[in-house]
Length: 393
Image 1: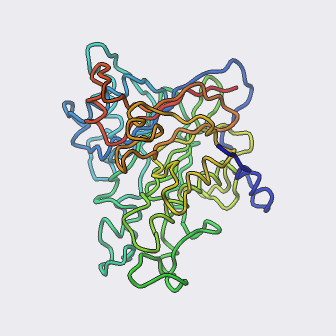
Image 2: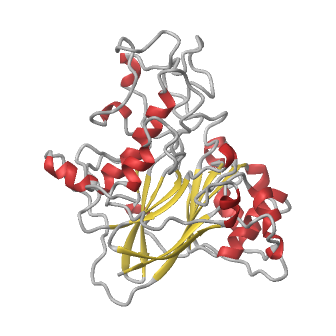
């Protein structure tokens, strides 16, 4: 597939390249390459009541898949944030999932896997602004789920969490949950009064531009320390580019959420995090982008952000995408989810200075019965885990 100029070179040409004023760790002093396994898994609306106690069938199936693959760094999309939800058990859902499921062998031939380092960032899903706005233009202001910053029936619904066998400095984690969509230069926001915006469309008013956030969940940069080197895990879960109107509001939103990390790794200076630190990644930083991006390689959406910001962007390695027998049987060997006949929406993408050793989508063929894995993938989610072994050069 054709590769074009990187976002970094484009931004440099127009004078929009900057670096973060905060000291976020970067790769230095390279020695013997260390390979780590990175994985993303959308566990489709896994809730508090399912993970806080053992015995849930969906959680068990997801845990068996994870114990089969044994990733070192794992992002779990659509794991509810119980603290935002109002749960006061004292244990986050990600820690409960590790304790009740992942650390306990889920089959006689499997071993438990512990993740001593976890992160459950706050999500915009289900979070209403301080003032009432009718974001979804249904005539009722301040109502969940449509008038929250991100679609959710309660705060923390459809959130995500990170589990790692490698340490990271929590003080160096950057979150971008409060970054305003209007603060992205050249954004695609449909604004009231613009040409083509109709009264029955979803759009933002001038007042809403001052509060509407870019991230439907959050964007997070976690600097993992892997044998003396730093690799930034970049995590997000953009809104699905559907469920809107003729002016493609959610498609535009999805496009700009995906664009954000492309600009971030290019060092764009318009970016600011939730602590007020400005700028993107340093020029020599290594990174791996992970998550359900709700955008695929087929280009079946008019804005096609995956092609623009992943496949045709030299800032990400896409020369060898993970495949699976199960996806191939559906006519798309790159597919990572069952809907749409088989859609590629989940990604693990390393920076060009890292070495992609191997990768796969955990989706066995219908004939495969490897230790019951076929049943587990169906029970766990309508998504399939995507993993990649990545090392420093």
